[in-house]
Image (cartoon, rainbow, N blue to C red; front, side, top):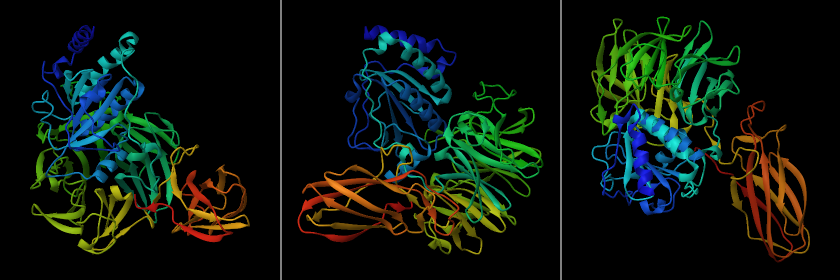
Amino acid sequence: MLRTLTVSFFSLLLSFSYSNLLAQGKKGVADEIPSKGYWLNADFEFSMQTFNKKILIVEIWHPLSLEGRTAANQLEEFTTRNPQFQLLSIILGDTAMPFSRNELFQFARENHLNHPIGIAKDLTSFKSVDHPKYPTVLVYDGKNEAFAKTTGLRGVDSLLNVLEKRAADVTSMGKYETWQIIPQMSPSVWADPIIECPTYIAMDGPRLFITENARSRILAIDRDGNYTGFAGGTRGYENGSIQFAKFMNPGGLAYRSATGDLFVADTDNNRVRLVSFESDIVSSVGGTGRLPLPGKQDGMEIGLPTDLIFESGKLMVLSGFTNELLELDPTTARIKKRTSLMKERYIGGSRVYAKNIAAGSKFIYVVLSDGSILQIDKKNEVSEFYHPASLRDGAGGIAEKGGKFYITLPFRNEVAQIEEGKLIPVSGGQDGFIDNQGAKAAFRSPFDLAESGGDLIVSDRNNNSIRIVELSGKTMHIRPDPLSIAMTFDDSPDEMESVVLGPLIVGKGRNTIDLKLDLGNYGLAADGRNEFTEIDQYGMNFSSDGLSDKGLVFSFDPIATNGFVQFILHLTLEKKNSPEQLLFKNAFINIEYEVIEGEENSQSVDYKPNIRPF
């Protein structure tokens, strides 16, 4: 029966128009999940035998692969709806650009990836993989052989169509188990920093627009870091009110001051969106949501738009899928002109794609994912402006000031100047969060930058912060405190910061506890929900004077002699110097006291919640 299903399934694969992208795995060749790697939020290594009663989907890819990230999101959405399938991602370790566990954690958080992701030193255990081009996806049907394999985003689209039909076959799905391995912590309950994983930025005089990919929203703040508006906040595709609009891995931004409109490259929706902070409306002005068909050079499709600019009144859009510069008419949603940027090429199995665009005084500059920078003149002639000595020198974004060119180097944690093809350090060069002069400053994966008033504005992605680099050498940050408090932010405290304060020795008399919370530069909002909820008192009678800036002061009388006291703090915090601005909502801390019989006791406990750079 299993053999019949396998043959039938493979026949379906071949029936699709993109069947040339799908290939049967090598018969009789056993694949195995690489050992001695490490997994995100997994305490043990996996093997093929772990998934004998599942349909296993393995995606092999590289973080530099735009298509790999998009495919991972699509495959995860499918497996979330169909629990008989299990998705694993394998990222091939790169000696030129090694990844730490923290970097992998940040990467998964930014890209909304909730399935197990591991880093492997090599792929020799995958006998079905000859020379992988990322993403490569293999499917295993309850035994250690790949019966379907595809590469590239088009191949993944075709494969998903087939898997959808397979999942709809209730009879065949009945033999597979529905348990799934998922990470221990979902991004939906991770910390809520003030700005989370900022990527692309755009300036409008005093206002700064920021793409928050991790939270699927677009922020508008002033130079002091105060919010002036936002759009989105939920993954998906939906137009209308900015509060309920949805984006899918949004990318670059372009502001048109004449109309007050902000254009967004909504990458994984294959669309260009328009955000009007004047009317509070989000709409679509380009793209159809579909990838362009092979060889089609007209029409309205925009494949994976990554960034955009306004240049001489024209809206120019980068397509990361076709590697073209598109001139888009936002009124008709038609593409007026296409400029091919380069021939298809790969580096380490990842297809190089155009990811960042900036307008200079003489040329348009396009940053590629391998760190190369192209320049495009007014006649649409494309030439190379900069080529890195190695992949680790790869640039994030580029900006011009006074004829000088500045770039971010995410893997060096540095902002540098390009002069005659050489890099001259300007700020940073070490991992961390330090405001200082030159090399004494520190960044964590700086991504994009823009010029403003003689300064460089930098999105410091893994520090969840926006930084200012004064070209005189000083580095500072816009947000006074790029901090987060590690708590859940939903209606029910399923995941929260937990702390055990104890053991607490109490007697039969009156026992007073003065709990002081050190909230750093934050205070408790006067009009917020600052309260505590008793969960399980184990024979304790509570009385409380309530919450204040000093913390929670409460007393209790023991009835039982042993056990523990557990309660939840429900806080709303605000900046002390900006009481009108509420920064957090529905923040919970779960606190427990272990209670041991003893003498009458009064004590003060100082506790600092997990407030830190994320």
